[in-house]
Length: 109
Image (cartoon, rainbow, N blue to C red; front, side):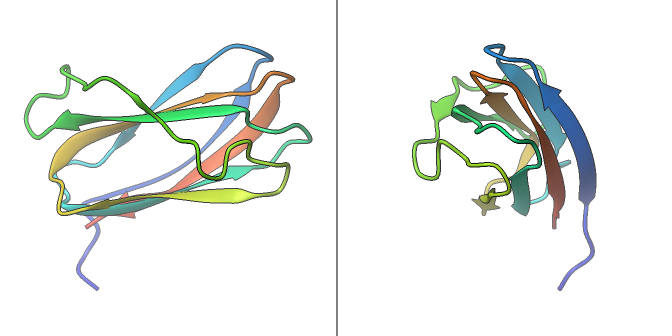
């Protein structure tokens, strides 16, 4: 496997009913895999993803809702994979109607 261009591991608290946008650095990698894990007691009830094109980090596309795997139950995880898409940033927006915690880890190559 080639060397990673980007790596990240973060944890976040989702406040009940408040969408949280999390920007993950992809740094021009053409392939990436991130795993979103619900580490709390309540489900993640909404998720969307958006990409920023290579070299234009401040310009992010309109988010697309993720429906497969949502709601994400406590203890469950969901992969987000990019293939042949050189971008600078992947924005994952998460919501939990009751509040929960999540961990995201992954990287691009």
